[in-house]
Length: 75
Image (tube, helix red, strand yellow):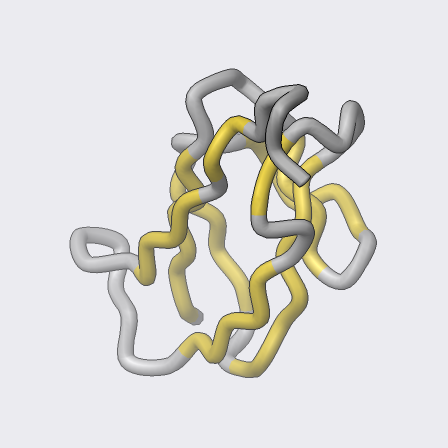
């Protein structure tokens, strides 16, 4: 198994390849592979999606990625 930790300033559902897999700031357990990571609506985050390759992770050393809060002035 591989492990992913997604950070965002608010609690949000994490979507892996469009499927609900858990919440932000919780370590997610997935099979080794490449995935597209997004968050549940509203679409007030950036980037719109992240492509990640999971390999050689562990529960104490997950792959960590961040989404930032997008403000109205962001294009």
